[in-house]
Image (cartoon, rainbow, N blue to C red; front, side, top):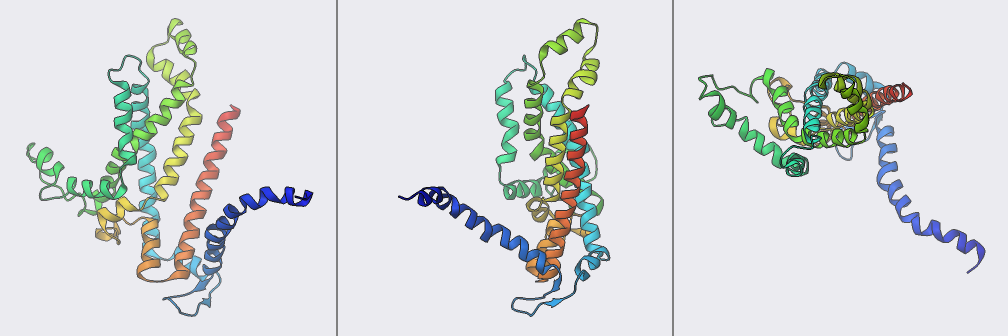
Length: 294
């Protein structure tokens, strides 16, 4: 084997990966960007160039604006409801004297590995108005009226957030647990000896040292919120339920691509979603860098 053949051999071995990456990722991404500047409705139709028309149309599309609002609503719920619950659970997991600690760690991780389809079906039964678990076994025994969790536009998003609370609290708690276990216990013990109570130790020592983990969890929670599809789709239907109250950006992208066959407009929605996620991620990474400098 000649010298040039020896130099070429490693690249030949890794070339299948890069060929597959280019064919199945780079090309679709580039073509979708190209297609977002065209109007194409239906399979086999001739696309017509519209420039930024699809992106301008997004700004005046009431359904798209509604989907952005709903997705942001859920992302805010993830940050202000799910993450605090996960932090509290992580602190509990970090307690050495907690009985069955290893069992609870596994138990709270289980929802994440459960299929999203199965989770949505189960919660569809939980939220069902005539015979659902919440209405029949919690509200009715208390003498309270049954609620249309998935029928009342005001309750649709809180219902989806409750689903997210059940499914994602456990895994985020494990992230916090990993961060907590990297904090030297000697620092907390020294503060306690100096007279600090538990709240002061948490406020001035634990939480500041946990900020990188906290920001990491916030980043993945927000990105996951903007990519959520299966659960709201199966709970509320493709249109997002009454008044599009549960319509997410991913669902609206699906509707335009697979039901309305508006491929150019769908590509524009996909890139708008990508830009939103990119901006939010960059802002949070900037904050993470600022905290690390502190």
